[in-house]
Image 1: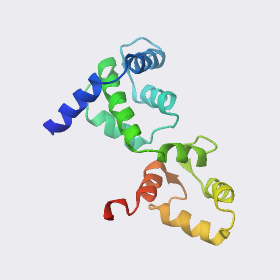
Image 2: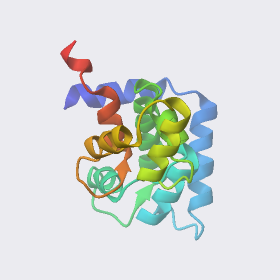
Image 3: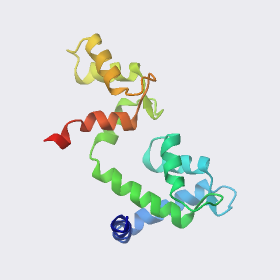
Length: 162
């Protein structure tokens, strides 16, 4: 726990001033009423503006659960969270970009149609049945949608075994 906090502080110090300024600007834009904090809806909009995807309810809940019980996310908390998120995004490689290409409608999840369209472009030789089976395999909760976490899991499957 302490080690992770130390890492966070080191990451925060190493963030370019332009990134920090960008986070502050987005906070100010999303804090339309100038209340000094972001509500959960404001936070979703801010993440969408910064990272190009709409965060899931679970992702927002997990971010907010780490904060003291207050009305919302203050500027300092927001900047710290976005620095951590940016560092995590940089470490995961190209999965996010690939997901965004698959998610042509920018919904934050993939449907079977998104999946089929992407596979027609990258692997046109695969049968529709194979693509459908792949979709079902990646859609771990069988809700007919592939969220980013399911996609990321599939992209990284087997890496730790090597």
